Length: 173
Image 1 (cartoon, helix red, strand yellow):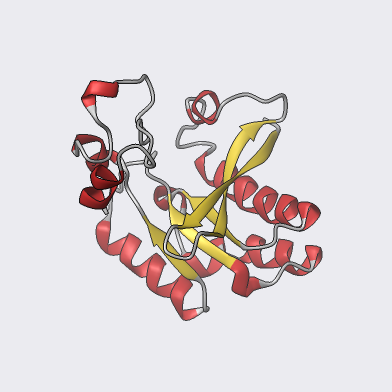
Image 2 (image 1 turned 90 degrees about the horizontal axis):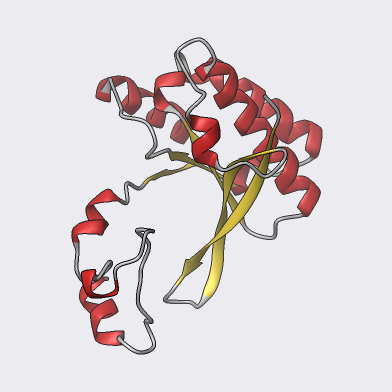
């Protein structure tokens, strides 16, 4: 199925500037990531993961994203790190996108089934010089300093104004 990418800034709060942009999969007609991920199974997981990596690099190059680009990957789709990275390297070369600006981030959408295998993947990517991101936001949801139940919203991002409650934010960070 056809996909596209949206880019979400990752802000360095200490410096007050964008550090990177996370590439987020979307359908080519604007469908949500959730609707696409619901269609992933063991038969198409590898192809979907590869397609997402390639599209992320292509769009980052086309848009001339001025910072690092964080590319999510599905750890259960990677059978051998050196083989799975090849298409990403080829896309970066074809699009003239600098490898040193790529971060690989373990997606929180998929349960890691084999921790030693994931460790091997991360080591292989680091050995090739890539930065690695392993961020799982679900624990944050249970911190009242990140997601305050008083200001409950359907989404689980920060749900209050940091300017109005700088003490809450400081307790969180």
